[in-house]
Length: 231
Length: 82
Image 1 (cartoon, rainbow over the protein chains, first blue to last red):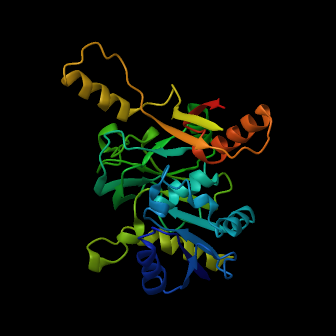
Image 2: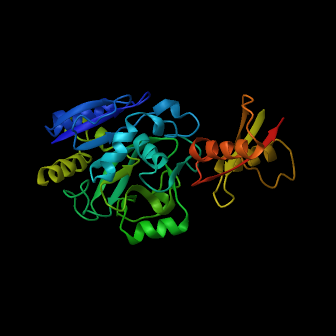
Image 3: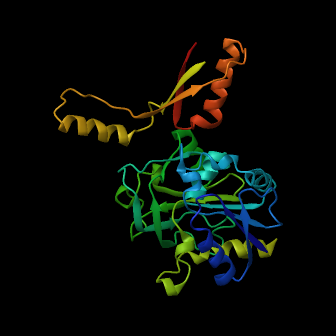
């Protein structure tokens, strides 16, 4: 079982993801350079947070032309696991591996704080070790996390149970007061229809060990590891 | 050949940036500003390659669809001079 962490020019959460997968989960993990044209046999590709290509034009827009994206598309099409966190989520929507778009936060400010998430679905490789409705505390740090899709696409996401995480309050209620950025229907993370590609704005890799005061994020990585071990 | 491309949010997409600018204009004393929508403008200079007008237009549309606009949330328009 091997994780691959993509390093784009401007990625800045790559080492956090590497640390969690290698040192906390104890899996094999290696770095995938944006100019690489093969995935070095990894089973799960993580596109980490940051500001790839300076977020020029639109967050994630220029990353779709990185050479590493072609093998990632093939990996995803073949059912391989792809996980985009924050900027990685933005990249996945721009690449077209996930529907919708991430727009400027509705309040126009950069949001950097802890939020609460409700786990909506556990039948994905990313959430299999979590429980349905489980509330997780995770940090967010983004200026463009406002998830948008047209109503028909949103309905389709709900119908196919592709909404995996939603912003909630401490009671697990999905209310606008708990929504940190204006995302449609409080959406914080979605998967594709085949359930092997996930994008989420919050940062599980920044809260995966007790030493940091919060280990709520580790369940996501444990889920991926468990799913890969089952294959 | 000079091309001007305008990319803007679709009318159905809320534009909080435009709203903030509208409020700022109002608070500066410009009364009667009913709406502001913010967008992006690109000035593109193309080498003269002897392409016909429809060919240039097709090329510009591809540029917009592949990169300049995210058609999930944005519309584009363009004008060609020369």
